[in-house]
Amino acid sequence: MLLAVLLFEGHSMKMKIHANEERTAKLEKQIEKENKRTDDINSLSDYMQSDEYLEKSAKEKLGLVKENEIIFKESK
Image 1 (tube, rainbow, N blue to C red):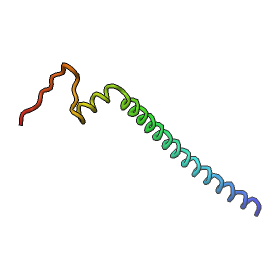
Image 2 (cartoon, helix red, strand yellow):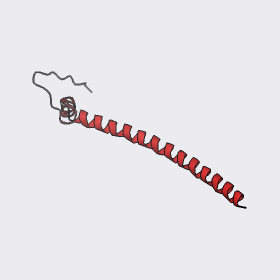
Image 3 (cartoon, rainbow, N blue to C red):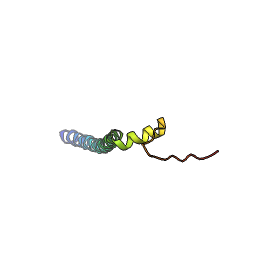
Image 4 (cartoon, rainbow, N blue to C red):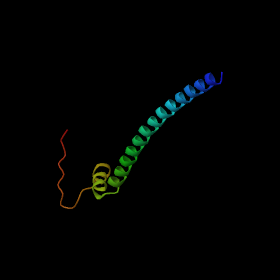
């Protein structure tokens, strides 16, 4: 009887271990995904603080141009 209980408990523990390994793998993938997302956000933040971004925004949103810069507009 004791042997049957031990076998059952051993099988139950193996199932829990397998479930935990699967959960760990999923969480590791999620961590990698979030780390990639963090890197992307940091890169975008760095770009948005650059002079290149400021110039582009000033031209697109405000219509500003640099001194001695020629602008060509498409006729409608």
